[in-house]
Image (cartoon, rainbow, N blue to C red; front, side, top):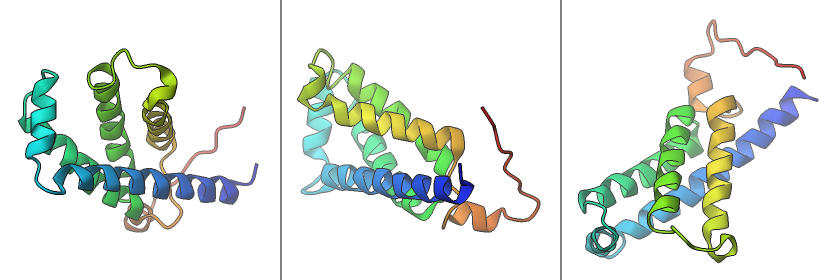
Amino acid sequence: MNNKNVEIGLFFSRIMIGFIFVLHGWSKFEGGISGTVGFFESIGIPGFMASVVAIIELAGGAAMILGLGTRVFAALFIAVMVGALFTAKAGQPFLSGTELDYLLMAGSLTLLLTGSRFLALDYLFNRKGSTRQNVSA
């Protein structure tokens, strides 16, 4: 498999995952965070966590698009998705919207494990002495 093609594929995944999280984070702040705080409290999550999640989604999504802290934010996105699946979406059937959460979690797991170097600030900042080992099956 061509490593450049893999990197380009990871790049597009990183951009889309980041974009989706930016939109979801922005929507939590749009019109004020109080609605999201109320929802979190209604399902037993402390209200301050609404701001924490919104900031992770908005700032993390933007950083993901830029390729900055890709693995760190991928791990945080996984935590957010696990939290959503076990609280806000607990008991919902797979095809009722949870499939997006599972897909975002899987994509984030991929980026956590692989990183993404193509057009990524992380790669540009850490190029000196940084090598990626190829893993063959």
